[in-house]
Image (cartoon, rainbow, N blue to C red):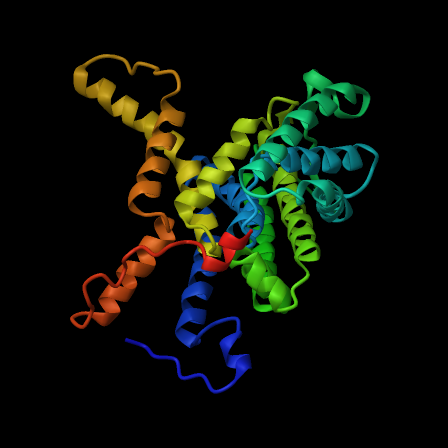
Length: 365
């Protein structure tokens, strides 16, 4: 068992706990860059899809997992980022400028929406964000001259100076673009959590009363969290549009918002790792179900039968199972297993007993 003896505050907030942790994450990044040489184009496309979902998951994780503000309308911000980017490109703006600008525009719109929305909390905030997602669907239809309406828009190849990058024509180059984006977003996210701003997010999540007593500006913290969350989600929306190639008002439906929330709950709320674990489940489960139906068809000697709603049914069962048996998600279960192995044979019974998720001070609200 490794024990970290810390003698200063700087050691407590350093980016990596020790050199071993740095080695593990560096190895993971190297493996990610080498992945196109290890798998074929089909699975590389699926991995690209997983990374895009991870960017969206990090956006929602910042708001829900680390600030405690429930949202069922993040599909609206995916749509905002997607349409903002493609409209900018349509008018001749290059990718290097249009892509970050799409995130900034989405973050700014999210901050404006947050002013009235964050007066609510809990289930009421979730309902308000869901209503906003439905409203954005109508706005896309009404702004057909710019957005294409129900006919949708086509995504042009990504022009990066001397080369054109397309998901179908150059899948390896497109994968590297998405990989660089997720690495930069993850590094930025981790640094936010190390800062006073990130600690304010966590304080608001744990207890607004206690955070306010410690001098945290609740309204400002929530608004900043909403803006950053929407900005990151907008970047994911731009990538989703490039990945799909064509999209319209039905692409970013409320179902996407529910999938995003399921993803971070299954992966593990309140952790960067949870967004990646959840993205793996969301990204690969449809393919696993498709392959499984083929296996079943081969075993029974017939063709695979299409079952309507099978994918969402399985998602729902997985979510219910995690809520009942492991609310901390996949990453929470891994932490428990790792802790058990480190303490063996000196672990004690009941060390992982579930605790109440709220403080007594919250009862005053």
